[in-house]
Image 1 (cartoon, helix red, strand yellow):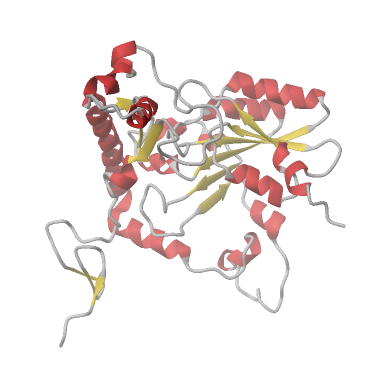
Image 2 (spheres, one colour):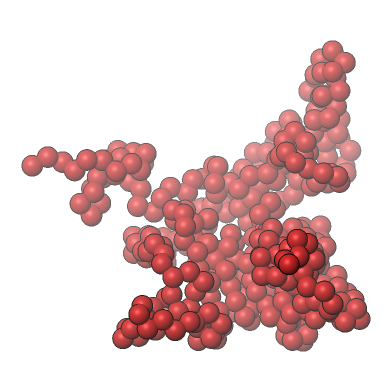
Length: 340
């Protein structure tokens, strides 16, 4: 009989253990449950004041699991966390992983695109030492869903783990033309075409300029937030995420319930400018909503302020543009071809 609790606790006895930032993506726990390891096999490592994984805390967790006779096997370093856009210290984590004999995976799904910018790629220093690297061009690069990449350090590794022989399907073509032999799925859409076409359109220089513009827009948005008396900048942007707070949300609710008014001085009373104390990014306890239950509203400026527009979108000064026989309108919609 199947164990209904297997997703949570995994198999009995000593367990394989993975480590990730406490602010890392939820998918690691989800996939640990799907793979049969159990969600409890994922250790959420505490972060520092900027949302980066604490290396001393990571070492302590590994040592504790070894004493408990568990088997540490993987460390997941995050390059661009979902909320704060933080980058874990990949080089230091790589040294720990190498010393402990653990697989190092870098989740660059969001922040990996900064590698395309010579100015900003230092944030991922050490990623060349990773055993695997995940990257989602459909995030910061604006490629339509879905466009995802998994890179591994050793050629042939994916085939060794995932290959199944099917002579009726995989015939005389070389392996590089049979991606079904080195991936989980067999049939799939041509996801790589979107990324290839965008790269042909922009080139390395174009992508570098776009990344630089997005980071600059985040910094400008942070300055605007910091100058607004009704808003409170939580911290300087680590990349393109701008986290800000609306001070006094709970007091505003109490005043409203009491039938009182709401004055600007109430907004400033709890702010950093008035108290000198930095705000906490999150309150303890359950959080099912995003606002107003959370004290912080966060946004990726790249998504809400800068765009980015699709790489093949018409320039703003040109309402309609011909592109490869297609006509693209000002809102990136495909228009009917011109008549004869």
